Image (cartoon, rainbow, N blue to C red; front, side, top):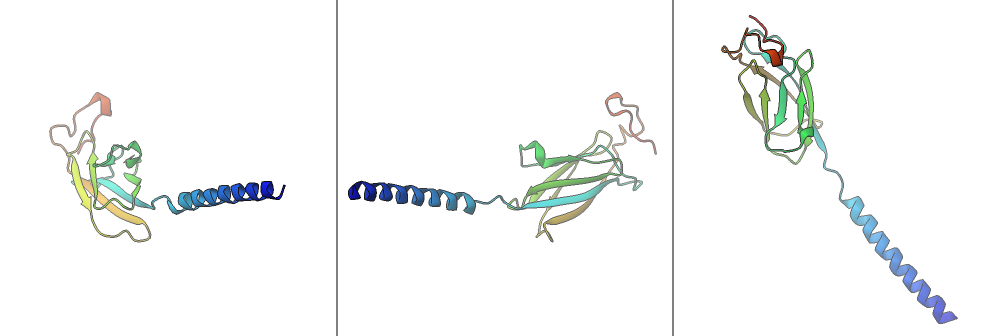
Length: 137
């Protein structure tokens, strides 16, 4: 009876040791912190906000690494803090594509960037059905 109890205790201790190791391992592999990129996209010629522009991390296949500007041209995008440098592309059908690289350390996990898009003179002022028309000068 005593040997049976000792055997059960050893198995219990072994199981607890394994669980403790697994718990330690899973808690030590924490999520990577995020860097928040906040900013505004504006018309480089007029200074007006550019709604519906898309800002995307260029070296990622993850759809969550992209954002669309609101009516005031503002956007918020989160990326892993381990990604250095952060390469962005900004596109809109009425403007030339802009690519930029953010280097350096984020302050309080936030980066602020304002991006001027040069108008595409071939599309600017034209009535483009999918876009609802480009703004006129």
